[in-house]
Amino acid sequence: MLAPMPIHRERHRTARVGWLRAAVLGANDGIVSTASLVLGVAAAEAARGPVLVAGVAGLVAGAMSMAAGEYVSVSSQRDTEAADLERERRELATDARREHEELAAIYVARGLEPELAGRVAEQLMAHDAIGAHARDELGISEALAARPLQAALASAGTFAVGAALPLAVAALAPDPALIPAVAAGSLAFLAGLGALAARAGGARPALGALRVGFWGALAMALTAAVGALFGTVL
Image 1 (cartoon, rainbow, N blue to C red):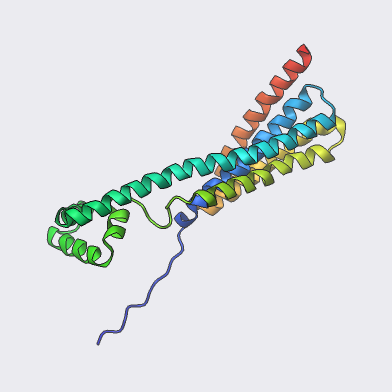
Image 2 (image 1 turned 180 degrees about the vertical axis):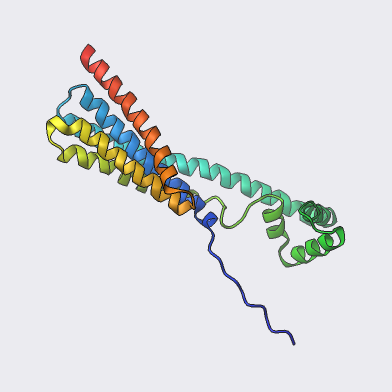
């Protein structure tokens, strides 16, 4: 009797895609939008009080917007996945032979001999027909499945954390140094976020820091310029 083959378990980074994308987007948006808002209001020569009020309002509004946007968009993805799975269930119930041929053809295209592909499709469908078609025909897997609530909570929470960072700098920095302190601090936060996200995703931290920092610096510079322009005009 053959001994059972040992199970080799691996942890892949693709399992993090759902929450990591939402978390990075939320934190990045929180830092960039709040820092830009603070800089824009401060550049218009507003006092610290209105600057902080605008920043807190931006934090609350942005967190709720991120949560709602992620929930709606990911729910749409989940609805599409559910509709495709329901269609596959109907096709399996009414024309299982054709579905078997369809699955076998996928395996042939991936390099299996037709006879082997047919046997593989038969065994997989006997074990879990809808699972085999979801994975190999539709590209729906457990790791990449849509999770609206998880995405909404991750985006809202990380947005609030990200937004709190430039707000804290704005609250603590001396009045004459408020604008440069918020700008420099926010760029440092963005670089750290980019490096951390790149490392979690298996990419080079320096590249992640550079691309996040570039867009953050551009957003803050443009917003500060608008604030300075309108402040001068008013």
